[in-house]
Length: 104
Image (cartoon, rainbow, N blue to C red; front, side, top):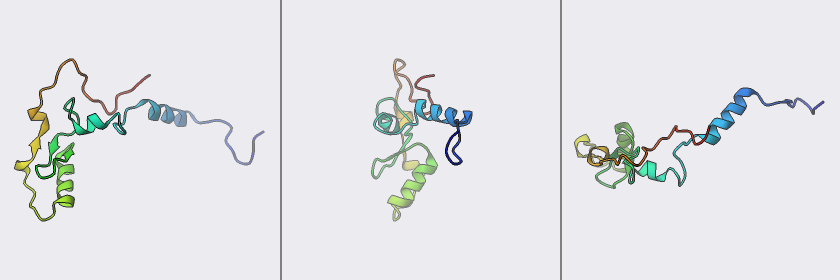
């Protein structure tokens, strides 16, 4: 018999969620810094701000950045630097994977 209203066991979905959180690369922390910056592998940072060199994964995120950080300058999509177009990926290095599993 257990204490007041304490469940005796964990549910299968709760255990599965904990395993998923522990084994999936979310792209955060120091390990995901190279993926976010896109320096080494051509990672997730597709666009680069021409004014402050900040990177963003998509056009909408870059527009949000520009509206927040550079409100006095009009946003021009043609001036953005496309880092994926200028980068040639090496076949020997794996592409960054945010949802890739570390272990099964």
